[in-house]
Length: 350
Ligand SMILES: [Zn+2]
Image (tube, rainbow, N blue to C red):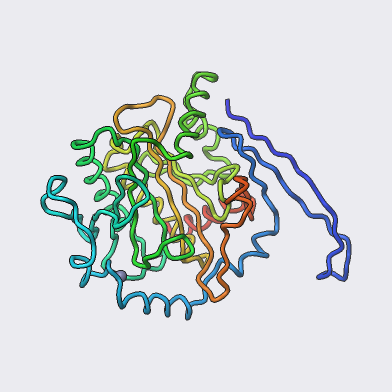
């Protein structure tokens, strides 16, 4: 059974912005219901931090223009400047799905690491990430994974990763996605798999199904799309506009139907449009899978997406010591308030 734990703490200061009147600050410690990791929800932090999260349009457009000149992913250079698969893996060298181009990574983050160039456009605002563009990227990644499974079935842990724009860690401006595949899971996947297995053993049910049942129609629930459930986590991992999706009853990416992939693409596009409306330009997302060679009753494929700081001369980053080195979570806004904002946005746009 899923339980939510929350402890509220206060401190008092004399605030110089309010003629040194006494002010009470609130800190809410929330425990993640699966991993037991703490996230501190700091009320009012969003209003303090928002100025660093939006972009200077002139600065952003200037950077887009400057990086276009030598971009290896732009259509006029992609065939000359990007790596190809070796003929034993794929005799055509690259995979094409409509606008999406799948290529090996020049220097990746895993023993099998590929890039999916998502668009012919060099720069996309977040509301330009239409479902078809994301869907074709997913399809390209899936074609690669199926070929990988034929040749190296032991490399069975894939993760889809989006790092969009420099604040999200991308060295290339042009919209792209990565697929990282290894013979061993990333640490977060290991943690989720182990904790989900223990939950099944202790509670005799699937954690992810229980999570959806508990959250459905509640204050953090967003919407359902083609068997994919979207919600804001009770205790976000990174905490800036973090949204989670769960593909019900599917434990690895090869089990997903075309409808599921479309559900993921449409839902992600909707969240990115919300981010755009709030003034954000950059994001990270991960799509986490169990092993591709078996079905697990205790794990569901899931996605997380967060917005990242804006592009401006100030060079602000939200990869500060607390989440980066101390491994604790921090949310700069109550998850329930974020969920209400997204629900309002989706009601207006549907
Ligand atoms: Zn480009």
